[in-house]
Length: 195
Image (cartoon, rainbow, N blue to C red; front, side):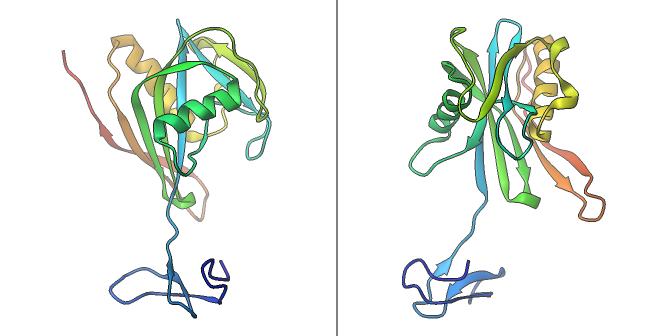
């Protein structure tokens, strides 16, 4: 950011009074421009024993497979965003079941939220951001061609949880070492439900 979107004056990056983080502050009107993490809303669409995946037609990770999802828009709920993204990427009709997993990615200022969803019919197709859309059984999942770590983690949890037919919420942080660029996933919470 270089200029204030309220008055057009230059911004400076300093710690405001009574704060502990640097923020963009307008030199003219004094407005503080907060930059907050971006919310990614996704679905895990299930049809019988299969999962719906999309082959990406955009960067990052062009040509790799992912669960339907994307950036939440202003003026929509997480539920609305997840349904919209699934319709945009897979032209699929779904019914959300529940929040299933949440991943914090502080190195890229993102939070990824996944909903388990029922795929209501087989009328799906590649949207403008997808090269292909396909149903996969667990054995057919192209594990080496999955685009994002939160997708891999969500799918691993799902197939483990499906064995017991108990689907707790999973929450973790994905950290990247700035020197090696290797990532680690640290579980923060697994809400274990008992019968």
